[in-house]
Image (tube, rainbow, N blue to C red; front, side):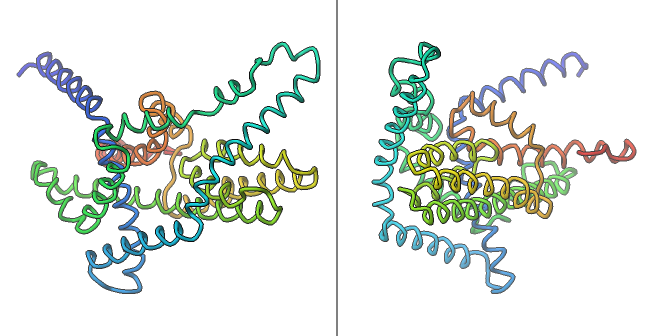
Length: 344
């Protein structure tokens, strides 16, 4: 086969492959979310096995049941009330946005630059729940619904985590024997990368959520626990999550007295700097490090293509793509090309 014909065939195959990935984006990202759950369960089980040397499958089942039990316990002890308070928080934020708007409009000459309806201004600034759920339904399927797909993701994660080696070896059988060992190392490295990223994010989520909730609770701020939970959950998305979580916190603090506002803002800055400059770099130095600029680029692309769910899954997907690229392409090229480049 001549080189021009081979290049054309490769181009056609790549185009067809990209078209298939686009058409199957929803199922593929659902599977990837299941792999994230499996990586989280596997990371927990690996930590437990250092103390309790039991087989993989029983530990995965015990850990899964423990997580379900803790979730059910949290819902029974105020979790549903916490969910109901979301509407109260949204109404309070809208009211506070209107007050801020009135204060800005009272300055005079620049008021004509402001919109007439502060509610519309807030609606443009903050995404509606309908838009969030519609984009999520686009990715995770509108036929079964979000709840059914969440169940599918959880069970996918459990099944993958019960016997990860079996699924890995099944994929390796489709790889030519000459490249099987290299592919095995690449897949093992990708699993290590994904577990490391998840451990880093889970630790930072718990620390940020606990510190934020504790600070606001000590200051007597309304919906302090909800704001702490929100700050922890949004911290799953690097870089952008802390910025988004700071908006409701600052707007809630603006309703308090000046002393509470100053202490709250100072505490918020201290927590965010602790997470961004101390905790996350310390964990990444030990576990995994991702170039922040490329992570943000991946978020922009995934957000433009798939909305908020794409932003949430962008960084772990980038970690997987980067690990596979380094293992299968960059490192073999380096083996015959002299010393490695700096700051890779």
